[in-house]
Amino acid sequence: MTERRVRLFKNGRNQAVRIPREFELPGDEAIMRKEGDRLMIEPAAPQSLLALLSTLQPLDEDFAPIEDARPERSEL
Image 1 (cartoon, rainbow, N blue to C red):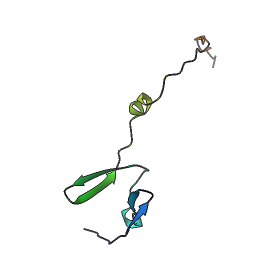
Image 2: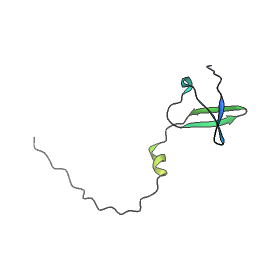
Image 3: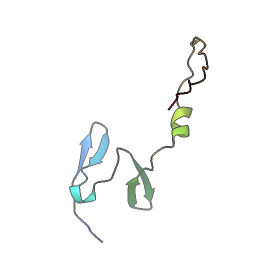
Image 4: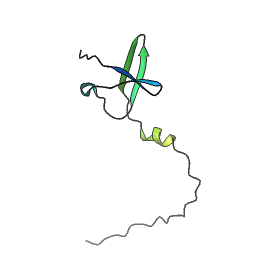
């Protein structure tokens, strides 16, 4: 197991820690949980498109109708 001593610091009212390069996580989000005295940090799985779409507000706008034209046949 790789291990490294790091320093804790304050960032406003939060306690923070810099993650050394060899421990960098992919992406820009992580899951953090506490198990007893241990603090566990792991990469967050990317959200599905449906999960992302469910967070969006509905549009209150009427759109003009779009004619569903059939494609023209090309002669080869």
